[in-house]
Amino acid sequence: MQPDIAEKRDALAALCRRYGVKRLEVFGSAAREADFNPSKSDFDFLVEFERRGDLPPREQFLGLAEALENLLGRPVDLVERKAMEASRNYIRRRAILRYAETVYG
Image (tube, rainbow, N blue to C red; front, side, top):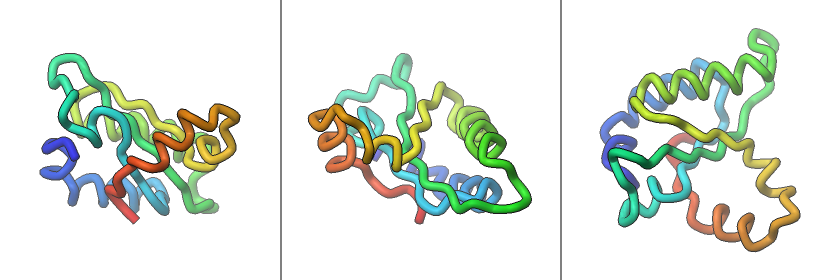
């Protein structure tokens, strides 16, 4: 796992609680770390939300994405886990789900 994520684990957990995240996982180069380029790479996350009455789903998703970008200081791609699980592209789906690392939850 990329060091920026490991070092900010407490802050990431606080964001997850704030936005009603059940589980947050990192995938892609930030999970592999070997091919992560600090000057170019973004962070790719899978997310699973708890549905709450105080935050609409859109606000949960967009708010979390923006908060993650602000915390980590780089672009973030946020994908709902259930969308990845339902993806027709089984090669991509299998690779992402197999190597995703849990950050929270």
